[in-house]
Length: 301
Image (cartoon, rainbow, N blue to C red; front, side, top):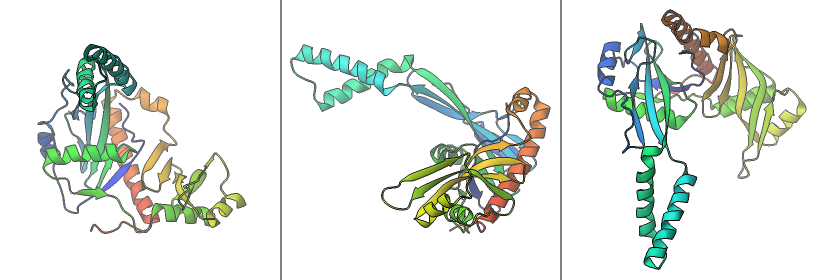
């Protein structure tokens, strides 16, 4: 199991809010993942986030947790095909086409019949509680998935005073300024990947990939009203990432750590301990540098 987070959705924790690892473990133990049954479409609950760990892995003020999700997959095309067949049979039986209510009831029946045979997709979403720096970070680039995990955690803990990270300078404004001036913020280097969006109803988009960003064409697009919605960045010569206008941090890649290295150590508990220490130290510093580059965090309302 590789510990390295690849995407960050960051929340700010309320100052002074604390729970011990034991308190969190006790709360999560009441809601473990139970395999999805034949009558359900989805089941979710907490699973061990590390080899040999309980439901909470901790080092000092750093806690790691993981939400397990099992979901039955029923493709809409399959449901619609069976529904069409049953609706045709019903029409032949009763002599007229089924109405809306009959179709709704028939669709529910089809789903009930197909559910036990549906393919089950399992996934795990990890979250890191950084009490030292006041962050709650979900390893996902999906705001909805991150919020879903936060909702489950809030319900199980009884409290989770965390709000999405917000900065004094909007990421889109900062990224646009960096590219317009050909500059990079402290500790970062703008790389050859960006996306621009027209600030008008057309929402016309331009994407640069592995392309120099210091030419006149890009500056012309910006002066013409397009704003930068994502940009590739290098950080302290240690990792690369993509920053979006929603303050999502995506596609993190540690320069000195290959996928083969991570895979080779996936079942090594000692290596996991070391990697967690390295990851939390590096990513806490990264988030701090990024917040500083965007003018600092906005005070909570």
